[in-house]
Image (cartoon, rainbow over all chains, first blue to last red; front, side, top):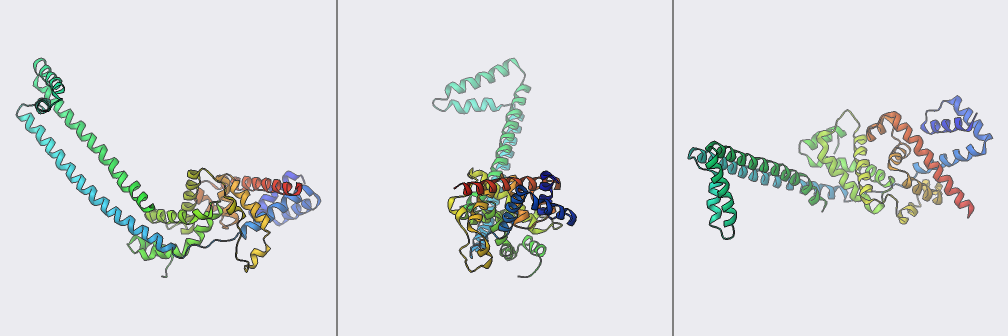
Length: 186
Length: 185
């Protein structure tokens, strides 16, 4: 038998899948080959030692420590869910208000752009910006129809909605997972 | 508290936290030793074990009672340990942990273990890449079957066998080189 074959048999032996006949063949090779003999000895000792490696004991208070963290985790989760509900209903109210305002603006033939320009005009330092917004509004209302303004209003509302949606998903993930895990780890 | 693992898990899912405390009592030693033998420093074992049980608690709903609870638990244990070792970027044991042997001299088994061989073995295992270290420890130390290891590492049996084969081979090479170093001295 060649050493390579013996090596495969050795592995099968440690896998406990070697047949009795092959075991005899392997043993006779090991007895006659110092190299394979040494390899077999090293592995046999290693696995015998591995089985007898000193076991370590868990701390006596281990269960208590874990259960304390679980209680804390639950409390944080409840708190987070409550906060999320508040934020969610707040956002729904805000969005409803926004949609309602858009509807009023649409019905009264006004525009968000016009209102923004009027609002920011009163603020010191923002006059220049208000002028630009007013300019855009004037250009649109002079050269294009009123329907363009309605489309812009709708687009602004949709963009705000998408922004809010993404923010909520991110906030919820952060609050539910990372924050809880980090706090519990502390 | 009595009951099978599955019964305890059902109780946990029903809101009974005492049942989870019983699960910890049953399996804490197994978890501690799997983590320790995957070459984690002893001082970190308790923290990682806590992380394991917290993860188990959070994932109880996804446990499939068709499989042994211990297998599922060891799967989580090895994943958390490997993540920990990767985060630390230092997979090697501290000198204290390598040289540490059981203090309990009254244990007759320990008296048969050559302390030097034990040191070499722990060092060799700690130097094995994780993909080989996990199957070697689970098969030879925890006496898990191929089928169980297959579920733990999420790889087919052929890969489990191959990794065990290569892991043993690497272990043998390392131990032989230590032996030669000692003989040279």
